[in-house]
Image 1 (tube, rainbow, N blue to C red):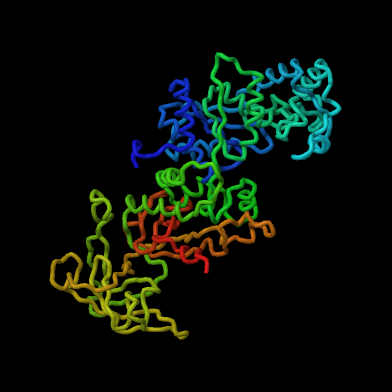
Image 2: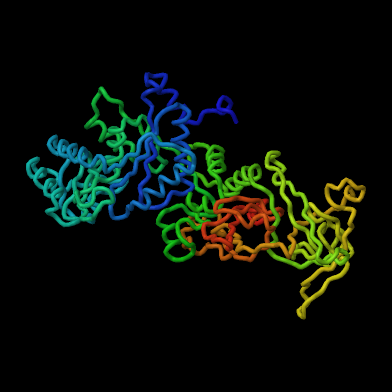
Length: 561
């Protein structure tokens, strides 16, 4: 959909109204502010696409700012992973910023608030402070420390900064309104003591600012025009504005916080705590496991940046939280991979097929189109021989008229090759078919132009030549949870819905053109799905991940009876 055809979302309407009321386009600046305490997931991707998309739409800068105010949980590893994910999605940030860049300025401003009688040091325990907050229907009660003198507050706060106190011994609180209907306004904590090394400032600081104090002031320092947050931060807006009211210079731009709805994805969880639980319990093999909803997991599984951006554009920006079916994300990756991936043949559940009237030792190299969706993709040669593999499920001894694959006495076309007829089959002692004996029509070769080659049969099968096939480990991934909303059940733990069939490993037999495939290369295994080469691959030991099946195999399962 062209830019001129797309209707504006409500965030864009806000920006357009601001431009009409006096904002200059040169005043617009956005930011994406992740906390580096874990890996980004598909929910973050929507926020990334929103903020950077606005930057592209309005030709405005977008900062990548790390909200690194909690050294207990943040690591440089996560910083680098976030930068890698944002860049992989195709976006460039204007400047790389950190909340820790502003620790000095935030401290100085906090001192000013103390001097103005708008902040005080509280020496109560966290439990006592929580108890005095009141309830949504009852006002809170004042801390006995609330009326400390400015001089004592300044002395204690400096002692907190200098490391004179233990963790939890003192906090700095804003002095606002203990009777406010918004409980976040009831003297919120601004600073706490933490004797932990920070990934950037090391042990320079013994106190760290909390989110509500840091976020708006960071936006103000960077002159962010529109600070876009998910809906759970709506109650925080009043506090965001209060802090700005105490400090804003009228000559400078005042940031504006606005909220949009979080879009949750079905059949997964996106809570960092729950994702960490999946990793630590061994349900998945790390943050980039291809079953994880992390951007690194989706990348490893074979998703493309384009498909994720298209997904974010489709679901749009809303004012109410909802759950988006994962099949929509899968639709977008199928749509994009269909356009860009070469077609190849692979067999994952092999059944031996012998063409009795094909000369032993003979081989042919047949022409095969790489991608019918892309004329420039060209073609390749694939080997054909007397002994082939087809899929077990593509053969039945007996079948009804709706079975259009191979059955005894029936004909099918081998993709890019010949029409064959099943004459007999061999079984093992347990009665399982282990080999099918066929004959072929030598004049029916695809593309040969003969009358026989134009003969229509209802079934076409993929195959590989046994003497030429290469083997690879193929990992068949499925949805991580059997339930659409695994963390929405009050009476059950989300781990109870883990899908035991979310991963199957099989040995695949692949056409030889794949022997030089590189990590990250994507392919369509014809009739099977889209696959990519996993990072576990080694020379001569390829590993493929199934990105997505060719069709939504869950559609019928998800229908209610």
